[in-house]
Each structure stands twice: as C-alpha cells, then as structure tokens.
Amino acid sequence: MNAAFINNIFNVAPHTFPDMAVEVFHFQYRENELYRKFVKQLGLRKEDITSFEKIPFLPISFFKTHAIKTTSFESELVFASSGTTQTINSFHYVKDAGIYRHSFFQFFEEIYGNISNWCVLGLLPSYLQRNNSSLVYMVNELMEESKHPENGFYLNEFEKLSETLKKLETRKQPAILIGVTFGLLDFFERHEIQLRNTIVMETGGMKGRREEWTRKEVHDFIKSKTGLKQIHSEYGMTELLSQAYSKGGGIFQCPAWMKILVRDEDDPLTVKPAGRGVINVIDLANIYSCSFIATDDACTLQEDGSFEVIGRVDNSDIRGCSLMVV
Image 1 (tube, rainbow, N blue to C red):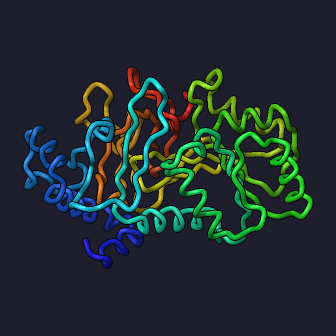
Image 2 (image 1 turned 60 degrees about the horizontal axis):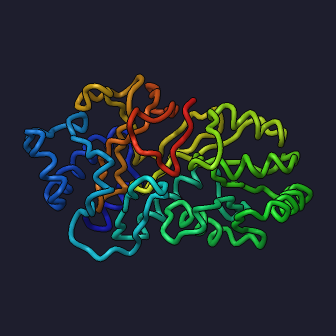
Image 3 (image 1 turned 90 degrees about the vertical axis):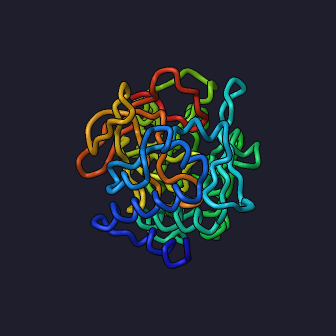
C-alpha cells in the first residue's frame, strides 16, 4: 500500500470504512500467504468478500505460532505479549514503526488533547523489565513527545511516585498516570493522594501477581484513595496497532480506523454489529500484519460502537494485559 492509502486510513469516515476494510482484506489476501490459506480453509474465495461483514477473522492464537506478515519485510519493531511462564508469547512483526506512532498519537490527542500539555507517568512493573512491550513503547513515545521534565517510568519506587504526584498537584499540572492494574493497586494501598489534575488510566493485567479483582472493584478502590470521579482505561494488545480508551465506567471508544464486532462463542462464523459476544477487531492500521483478528475477549457491544469488556472466554490463555471479568 502506498503512503496516500496509509494516510487515508487515519482519515477514514464512517461511510467509507466498509469499502476500505474490503480493500484492505483483498490486499492482505493477496500479500499474506498464511491469511490466504486460512480464508481458503474456510471454503471462501476472495470473490465472496464483497462487504466487510463477510470478512474472515484470523484467530489471535496464530500470533503465537506464525509470523503474521503482509508483504515480505524486515521488521522495524517486534513486539511480544507479556504472557506468563505457563503461556506461549505472541509476536507482532511491525514493518513501519511510523504507522504505530501515527495511530496512537492521533487517537490519544483526539481523546485527551495535545500531548505537550501532559506530564506522563508510567507505572508498568514487569513490562519495563523486558525490551519488546508495545505498551512501554507507546508510553515512552508519549513521554518523548510531551517533553515534560517530570515524565518518567516507575517500577517499585512508590515513594518517589507519590512525591511526584503531590508536586504536580500543587502546581495544578495536568498529568496522566498509566499503570498496569496490579501496580496501581500496590501503589494506592500504600499511598492515599487526593488527585484533581491527574488522570489514572489502568491498562489491565494482574499476571497472577495477586487475587483477581473486577474492574469495578479496582476502579472503586482507586477512587476511594484519590477522590477521583472516574478511572480511565486503555484496551490494546500486542497484536494490534491501535487502542481504545475509556474515560470512565469501562466503556471504550475506538478510533475511526478501528471497529469492534462480536461473534457467537459457539458459532465463530456468526458475527453481529451489536450485543454480547466475543470480540472481533478490525484494525486498519494493522495493514502489514492482519487487520481482522478474532480475540479471546468477551464484551457487550452497543449500537454506537462503544463496548464494555466483560472477561475472557473459557480455556483461553492468560494474557499479561488481559482485563478483569466485570
């Protein structure tokens, strides 16, 4: 795909999304041998795919066993899922890091405004201890663009993080604390800080570090320790190049180039535009990997495209960034 088409992805309108999705499907069918074989195994021909509702979704487990590449390329980035010692990691081979940066910068600023206005703090233990986390890459790039002198990552330096938050609050500096769930719980169990100018954003993930909590329990606990009215959330995964955000209540919004559909858990080829089911993601930014992924996350999808993650389907692997059952 040429640069003009990539640019069009990030300017897609709702009425042009279906046609663009079909165009991306035909590109990936032609240039991705694995995806082409998968489609053929389903007994489908490319000529059968005339609308985006008919596009087949590749099971996310394929990222554990195959290099999912559309066209042949040397990767600029390789991301790996965090997983656990009992699970197999997924790998995402990224042809063009600029596409990923374009995706997360554009949607972040659509939701939160100019990144230069924010101090960005990352509480991402375990993710910082490896070199191929897409989440750490994104947060680091946000920090680089923000250029705030007190941006920073934290492992277990809870006292230092507490002091930084207090200083920022005193100066009424807008800040965003992006944290993995178990890290946020560990931190706020030790430090109660009234926050008025800080957003707390949880990215999911307990990784067996502690007893699972529901998202509501997590959010209510953080609210009780901070006085915040809402706790924000991020929904993303290693296999994607786009994220959805929630500004409260666990209700997520997608960027224009990303769309959630739901499939029937018992009949994975039955896909619907709303209701309860398992998440299928169309991520047009994933142009050089696979834009059509069948995840293992269950959700309730609204007619307006917003969705609430309600857990994981039975027998699916534990994922490091998995969100808690509501």
